[in-house]
Image (tube, rainbow, N blue to C red; front, side, top):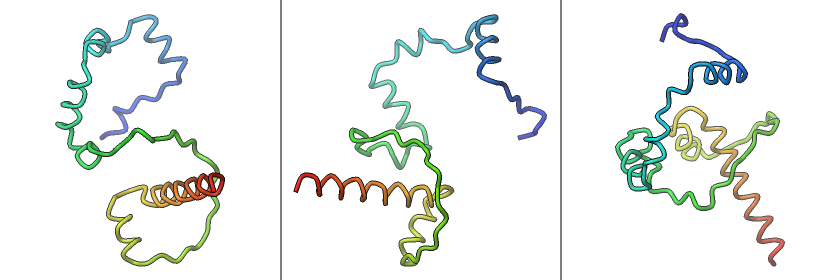
Length: 111
């Protein structure tokens, strides 16, 4: 992609453009989508191929927190697995550790 085609706008500029010219999103079409339509579109989207059958019912929004740089020794197969999942593997390792921490704290309170 050429940098000539990239346009950066502030939220206020985008809102003003929508106020003046209207939204280019077909909201009636979006509102008419059923859950089945959305799931079919997701199944057709190759970006969702590995995630479509995940149970998202317990998903939690995680807001970025400042990170602390550490050195950690991991088994090579564990590291290889996370690296094979692509860019952001360190963030995913952090998410797995966070989930373990939260479950441990929850079990500690229950017991």
